[in-house]
Length: 302
Ligand code: PSU
Ligand code: MN
Image 1 (cartoon, helix red, strand yellow):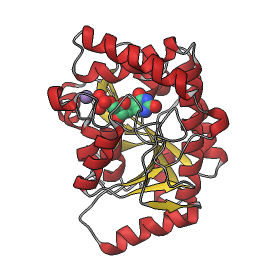
Image 2 (spheres, rainbow, N blue to C red; image 1 turned 135 degrees about the vertical axis):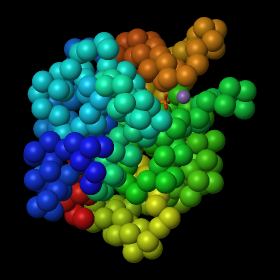
Image 3 (tube, helix red, strand yellow; image 1 turned 30 degrees about the horizontal axis):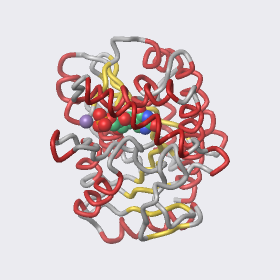
Image 4 (cartoon, rainbow, N blue to C red; image 1 turned 30 degrees about the vertical axis):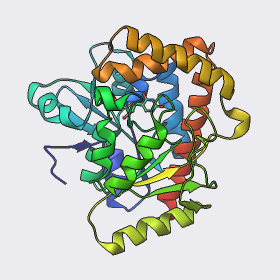
């Protein structure tokens, strides 16, 4: 691994050298997807959940121009609390490294850096994807293109429900990214157990996911991700009616303000949180917690 490009913590380096399971975690959800100061306790909790499930967490971020895999307490605090921490997609990595910037990594940047270091499993909340109204504004998350060319399994609760889910699934099909439902034949809806869309493949155990990963390796390319879509349990999902109503309002406000670019996703997530009296946050956290635990079990089964 090119040491100058990505710097693992001692713990992550030793775990990888010993062949112990490692799970990559993204940091944009911490810095820009969750409210402060709760975001820090969530970041700490997610790492603890990975450890309790027998794997080593590698939270990814760029700090002062250094791409890091595995953050210590101080570094995690910085990601969660420093307003100068930017949002970095894959395309932002070179400018950030070259200028000594600091930023939280999205799915695209995290998947790229983790795969570069040889990490095989990554957990997040919901992937980015094709935004509603994409025919007019061309807003499609860089997550999709990067996942089409990166060998990593991403455990998620589907794609963020603020998106155009059918269009996103269509793009993933076109890009050749395999999608498996974990214990379900419906694609999850992030805050919701189901998006209503079907998935073609269902897996039921961490061992089965590990077998799919090994089969991908055996097929030997072209490199693509594997999307492991795990639904938030029904008891923990957001009320679907409340979700639809608040989301309509948030999308309307987003259009009215003419929002574009990197700010769109954090804006919508924040509006949903406020509009649901915090219920969307709880559903989001339930989804992420389950995802990191499953990711750790998959990494263990590999
Ligand atoms: N999942 C969450 N919260 C988030 C995100 C995902 O539960 O904040 C972040 C991820 O980092 C994802 C990013 O890569 O949102 C997508 O942003 P954009 O749509 O601007 O590509
Ligand atoms: Mn976008």
